[in-house]
Length: 301
Length: 301
Image (cartoon, rainbow over all chains, first blue to last red; front, side, top):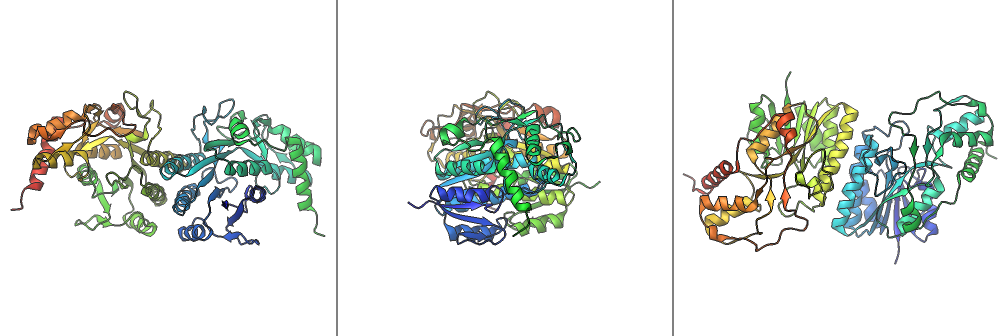
């Protein structure tokens, strides 16, 4: 049986890593993004346009759908009204997918769906009580899609991403901006850095999502390392590799309102039911990330 | 200050009662429904068409929005994929409303958002865990809209309807079908009728929603009588007024799966914070309903 997967957001941070991970598992991978790319199975389409969604699904006729696309503009996506558009587009996409015979849908959620404050965020035990529009839009979409999937006999899993880092992350986010400042020797004002966050290398997040899609696990699944580290450990680790530790100005910025001391994923479902364990520890992950940025910043030969 | 309200679903069961109730409170009332109607402030539009939504909101420029419209086709709406369309349309409507300066939005929820089984369903204490796509779509829409309203300074209340009856209810639902059978003397197979449900006369539901819209109460508000009665009491009451008690065949149909013994609204918020109490007891409500159907069934003079 052909497993033909359509990956939305295929040119994004996670998408670029997930396409090869799915191909390695034997999927016929079709990617969609807004801008044209090379590749026999890449489709350029704006998923916020109803007719483009319809044409894409009718053309590809996927058996599996990994829906990564969403508004992720740094600094804006937490409160952007575009979250409402992505709710609507995601529901319609699921409907088109089910109508043409789609069997398995993996959507992307977030640790921001949970009520923050628990020691470890657990799919079964921690209530969802998002403090942001982004979190509420993801949580609401998941609730509606889970009920819809039940009416259609569609397999639905919901991969809740925690903190990611690694090659291809966009500027405007913590790790790329810190690497840039440390490399240039410019000051990097940041929080006190004692808050602990569950960071996962993007290639591991992509591997986890690909393995989840290939499994028959349904419901919410945390995609995390299972061990939160102090943000200070991450930044100090970058400085140890690049130099410029004195450029990190801890305590210059407050934590955002509602930011808890710890955000850590319970990962029993990912580890045991899905059967995925990360390949990178944070030290190897930072080596890899710094090496990638060095290649980017090197002049072309 | 002009309070100009746009009422969606204005020609529906609740809508026809809510329009005069809002006018009585001093609102300038604009209604929208799919089919043309007489009335200076009635607008015919299909709210599932994006351009129609945009044109309507731009034309009316309401300060208040009471959003009743949804798929309510008897026997179908619990599982219909149209629920997904109404989620999307409702989110977009809220966005258009906020963008042109709308100040207060009252959306319509349902007792089916709650985890059924508690003695009384309470806005604060009873978790939302809908068992149906309809319930999940309403619950998800509420969660997303509440977060969106927070980003916009928009006042959002969510009126959760329980069981309604009264003039204008469509065929295919319990009370009109029982009245028709009792009137015609045909058998009416039904459940054992011992389950208790919170029934509210539609004019009271309309009055409650109008009063809620005029208030500054935000968050979920149960719209119910606060006292569940056995369905048997309701049906026996109809037979006492119409005749044909022997036509009611109790126990001929099972309760639906998941139907609990009691569905009853906690109404402290409605009674105390909103300040609304129903005018009809169930006996007066049945008198009124039977009289209305007699007028409908009478030959035109």
